[in-house]
Length: 450
Image (cartoon, rainbow, N blue to C red; front, side):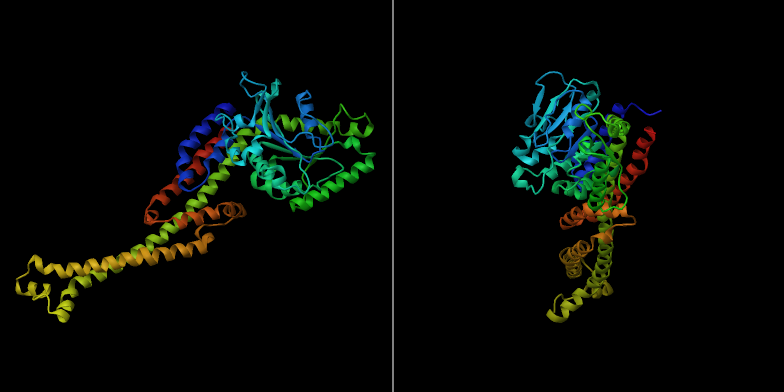
């Protein structure tokens, strides 16, 4: 029987922090990204162009006119709608408070600056279903908008919210079926990089504005075509169609789609049931990114140790030769010492003073070997590995290749900072711990939710 989801989420947060935080810090991955996912409650993010009916849908779900609606841009803020679980204080909380609240997952949004924070807020809504989840309304996507026009990087902010979301509802209206510039970028790159495909729901709303069934079919077909171009896929995802029953005039056409409207609402209300599974998916993905980085550094470490072992063997043989030959060679050129170590041993007159030249020769050989390794051999290995970073890991699947594209740059940074310490067994030990977490710890949690 599955464990209580809230209890399981809290347990996951503590367990992952204890096991993985040191490793994330060691390999330069941002643990705050993972920690924010582990915090708070299930989230549904609603996005779309400015006339797609986002606020209308949210108002219908809540049963109150909380958000302003209209066919022109009416709200330029990201608005979190939830009970918040803390009854004291104002009914509306500004972004400056949200990004500084350690109990909320919005701390990383500070980096987007004051312009964004001024367009971010939370509204407390006294609705039972919002005790266990949050809805996020977003500014409408526009065409040919630059970061400078908004004052912050809208698509980057959208990506961060998508990381947190258990469901992303992407809405279109029949008159702008996917032709907005920001919509194209969001579907083509922002959402695939930050959210799983299974979390995105495509919706065409306001179908009551279509003059007839033929007009609806034409708009639907246009949206399907545009989505195929934006996603780069031949198979078209499910597209829900909906309308606002309080604003649309009853008709036979709309009655056909009533059941689909209910299915959409049911999917949104069921978002909390996806929460723990999505958390595990995100942990799985980010730990596999960590695994690739550690694997690359482990391979580098192994190659470095092999070169160091070769340098050690050379130093040992050359040192032995230097121990035997240094004082005879020096004596042949300078006449010093009066008696070599070998002669002293043969004559039975060996004394500590006879070791001075042999040991000096050994020390010089070892010093030059060390200098060669640290100044030429190790830097050469680092340069070689940086030029062929993909050769350090086993990219035997498209999944790994995708993850590698995200972390290859971090491996390059770690290689540039590599020292002799990296040639020890630390990376190998870390690799074992990461593999154990994926094979045992994570699988145990997957079994608990089945």
